Length: 291
Image 1 (cartoon, rainbow, N blue to C red):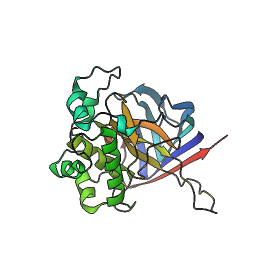
Image 2 (cartoon, rainbow, N blue to C red; image 1 turned 135 degrees about the vertical axis):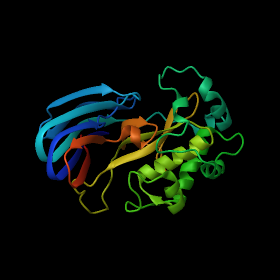
Image 3 (cartoon, rainbow, N blue to C red; image 1 turned 30 degrees about the vertical axis):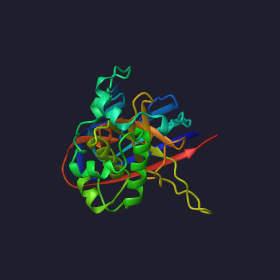
Image 4 (cartoon, rainbow, N blue to C red; image 1 turned 90 degrees about the vertical axis):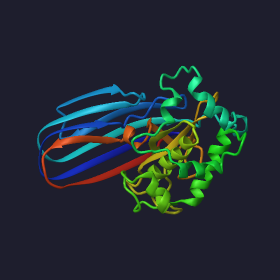
């Protein structure tokens, strides 16, 4: 599939902002099954300076500085991306989860970011006994690691409710576990917490998902959104993605932008401003298939 992706973030400020610095992680990654043919980031007002670099996890980070008074800021990412369905991995042929748990830290891998980095607690994802207890129902003795992870995704999808009003980007994983309501970020971070709590490496993936309108209705402009899912280390097969919000294995409708330990590593946009007063935020995303 080929997609045009437009991601616009707008801030309205009550008072003048005199200076602002921002970091954007909005560039789709280059992967064996994904190619970014075109990418650019536009700002209004125009950025005074900009630069890009590759962060610790291999994501592209764009640094933007805006000097001069402004009360509105727009940052728009425009992309043309081609996505194929990843090569499938047979769950039954993956190693037993105990083998992956016990060996991942000893394997020599070509990837400079070793799986061991993704098994410890991170700023937004703790390891807790109650998460381990929940996860263990999916990982009986000798269970293939991917089969167990897929069962865990199924249970989370069945036990929890998608509710965009229930949480925010700062909601703790423990609160989501208690209320059982939240959004894709919560589903992904809880599944990662469960996997890490049984000793399995798991990372947070951010990107986009092509959404479809109800039958007979036109797709609304700006109605798409950023999406999040999970990647679990499966030993020799490597990293395998799972989307617990929808209980699917990502195919050609998922576009990968960045990955890290949790949301704090891959936030699409963050920054600091010199100014005061209240601000309002609006985000509009369009993922449009093209021929």
